[in-house]
Length: 107
Image (tube, rainbow, N blue to C red; front, side, top):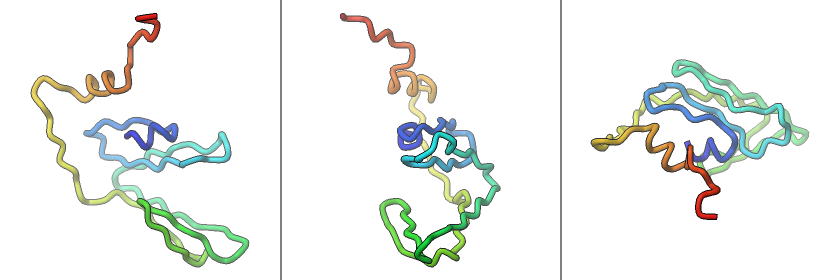
């Protein structure tokens, strides 16, 4: 969620089984984040002047021919999230993102 927000992407609630494709440092205002259904597959094709492209995922990169197709799909692995008593997802968002806080206080 934090990386997506930092890049201008949306917030998905934990029960939402979709996945996000959020562009980092897009060079156009027409590039937006995509919310992809949990059973969706996004296939990425490349164009290059050199015949090769560099792909970077989670800090690792590799060079591949520009004819390579990359299929993106939701992982079957699930993350277990501990829910503390008397807490809620939206309360945590409000507190961490300072939603509803009057920044003029204390001036």
